[in-house]
Amino acid sequence: MVRTDIPTVNSKLRVKGRPALEAFKRFEIGDLVRHIVDPRVLGPLRTKHVKRFSEDIYRIKDIDGFSFILEDFTGNEAPRTYRHYELRKV
Image (cartoon, rainbow, N blue to C red; front, side):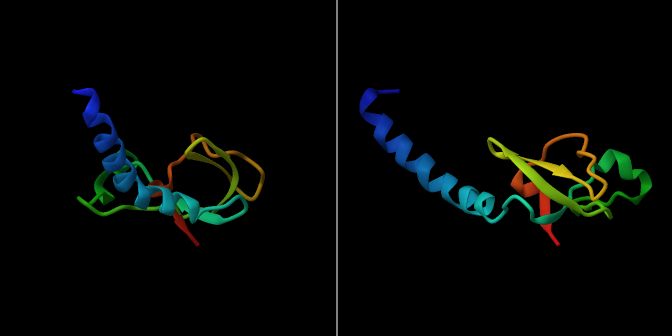
């Protein structure tokens, strides 16, 4: 990569990342959400290209970088953190 290409690459990345940042900003601490369920857990209920979300409702407890820490209504944290595209507001 030639050094003169760096500003062009940076501007293209900024334009490409803008929709993701806007989607990320839609979620705030305290929002009620469902998280995506791993297709391997669903087994025979799994269908291709269809996102399945949890039946349980979680609350966004904290934001860690670009990931969200969730907790259920009993105060237990979800087993992992989730990105904005893995969540759906209730």
